[in-house]
Image 1 (spheres, rainbow, N blue to C red):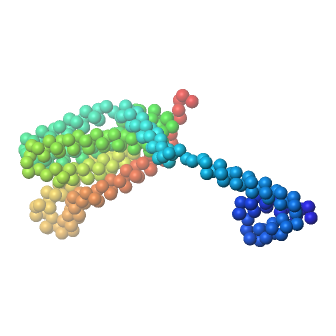
Image 2 (tube, rainbow, N blue to C red):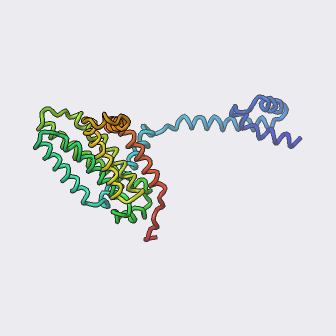
Length: 291
């Protein structure tokens, strides 16, 4: 009898809160009808429940608490990203910045001289590809071991350097495109940007990925070879050689069409960057000499 009383007495908090299932509720009510002690305990639990509910109604969340929490979290992420970018900017070879500016400036001079933007369209993707091929890896990167000795993940280091170098080359070429649009009246800005942006993204991503698998010089050579093959293929299609070799001609048409399809090139670039980040993520961090 005492065990049954103790069991049902333990169910009183659930009964008072209204969370007890139907069979349990009937058992408790049957017991309460013949047990004054449990009746007194039930009154106590009901009083406690009312007090908790009253307190809950008086406690209100601070105004805009979710928004402030998200803003604080977002601010911390942005500060960390900014610190990572500043740190990696100091570790990237300084020659990259000057070399890119010089080559893009030469492309601008040639384009202005001949009143044709072809020179810029050709050199801009090659410049970015060469820079990305030497931005990550021990071959041309003496600061990589230092970067990998920090708590930052290798893929974050790679992403930061990719963002810095590609954005720099993109900004240089975009600024140059605005100049050419003003100097060469027949130049359409949107068409000019599309002419170099997608090839730049694809060649840069390709050179970056290849540089993680082989020597940077070979990665640059392959990227340059693919870009040169596209230029040569366009010339061959304009001649009669492709007509004498139909299969070869169809291959050339497909290859040239790929380079003239910005959506396809950008999609391939995104896939190559994702693969490069995945490979970097598999790379082990270097031991921290300060520990």
